[in-house]
Length: 335
Image (tube, rainbow, N blue to C red; front, side):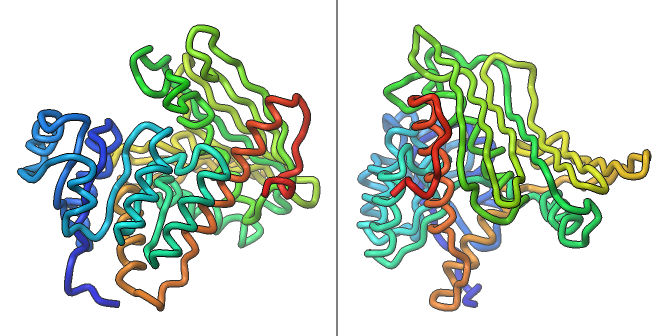
C-alpha cells in the first residue's frame, strides 16, 4: 500500500456533521488533507474554512475542477446523487453522507458512475467503525450470546428546527433518512447478512410532509428479527441491544459518539451484568483511515463499499414502499 502521500479532499457543503466530525477527521488522519471547501455561497465557504485553516474555497464546480482526490458530499439528501455522480464523472473518489441515495435507483446511479470511472464510493455510516461494534461481533462469533434471536435499535432526538433540511420534504428529510438508517445498518452488521423483508410504519408531520417517526420490523433468516425506531421530538436515545439464548449485550451510545467520549457496553448473563468501558475513539477518522487506505491499495483493495451502499439503500427503499402500501415488502423484489 502506498502511504507516501495523502489524499486531498474537497468538501461540498458546510454542514454540522462536516464541521464537527468529518473535516476535523480529515485534518487528523495520516492519509488525508484538506484541499478546498464549497458552500452555498463563497462567504459561507470562506467562513467555514477559516475554522480549519483552509483558505481555498469556491463553488461546487470549483471543487470538481480542482486537484482533489476525494470529494466529500455533505449536502442535503436530495442532492447526494447529483453531486456524487458529478464527482465520480470528474474522476474523484466519493465519500457521501448518509443516506447516500434517497432511493435504490439513485444508489444504483451513484455506484454505476463510480465503477464506470474506476473510483471508490463510500456511505458515511461512521458508527460502524467504532471499536465497540467489533466487540459485539466478537461476542457473537465466540458464542457468548448463544443463538442470536433479536436486535433492538433506536435513534431519536429533539425536534429539528423547521428551517433545517431534515424537516423539508424537498430535501428528502425525515427521521428515517436522518437517524433510522443507523440502527438499520447496525442490524445488518449484527446478523452479518441482509434482511429478507421489512414492515414499516411512518408518522408524517402534516405541516412539512416528512416523517417524524419510523418503526421497522426486519425479518432475517432463521426467524431472527430486528426492531428499529427513529424519532424526532424525543428524549435523546442512540442505542442497540442484541438478545441471544444465553445472554444479552447492550450499547447505550451506539451511533453518534463524540470523539472525546468514552462508551460502555453491558453484557447480561447468568443474572450478572458486566460493564466494559471503551476509551474515546474518533469513528469519523477510523472511517477515513479505512477508506483512504483502501484507495491507496488500488487493485489490491478487497472491501466492497459500493455493494454495502446498495444493500443499505435496498432496505430503506423497501421500508418506504412498505409504509406506503401498509404491508411487509420482500426485499428481494427491489430491483
